[in-house]
Amino acid sequence: MAQRYGGKFSPDGSPDNAGGKPTNGGFKGATRSRVGGRVNLLFFLPLLLLFRTFGNGAANMAMTLVALGMLLLAAFMTREGLLAEEAYDARKVARRPAFPRKMLGSVLTGAGLALAAFSATGEVISPAIIGIVGTVLHGMAFGLDPMRDKGMEGIDQFQTDRVARAVDEAEKHLAAMTDAIKRASDRTLETRVERFQTTARDLFRTVENDPRDLTAARKYLGVYLLGARDATVKFADIYGRSRDAKARTDYEALLDDLEKNFDSRNRKLLLDDNSDLTVEIEVLRERLQREGVRDDAL
Image (cartoon, rainbow, N blue to C red; front, side, top):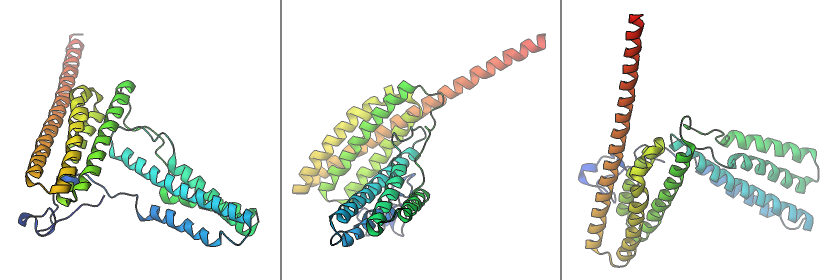
């Protein structure tokens, strides 16, 4: 994701932010999305087949429409595969995608191109070559799906599954907040919600890195985010109709409190993790010292 810049006259700008400085920490650690122009082309280019759908007989029309459907499905699977890969890359501990969407997109692209060529020429060899080349080029352009779990060594499988379910549910709450705040039609509020979501996701990543932290963070991933979602929905409905200044002030104060609490909990979990590491180091040093004393005594 590209970093947003703002100035004095931007929706969330201020005199202190003039000169094109980054606006806030809402995009800390963000990267440019790979789901963009190339994927959009995969949806538009197959539509050219519509120009040769009619006038060549029912059989050719049917094959062309099937080829169009396969190419559009390939574009959809490719986009979903890239989104899944971005989610995989964003986490230090992650499972490989359950289904290889990009590879299926490559196969569907090759099959769709081959069928479209066959409906046009009636030959077999040339369409087969076109299909193989299309599959290979698609794979080279978009890559393969992640094939291995990441950062799973030495991590309890059951605890990891619990964390994954909790984080997925928390992400649904954040997505609902994003959808709701759009109804307020205020870019500054949308940016404010995004900044809170970044703080919340920092906590998600901490829990994913050490699943033992889930117990201490469960209320934050569940109850608090559910309340934040409900408050955002109600606020968006009220503010979208009345532009009530007091409602806006109260909502922004709620986001401030939530952000501070999420950040505080995240820092405490990180501190506890550091304390655990310090204890393990000290225990290991004591063992090494004892072994050294025994070796000297021998």
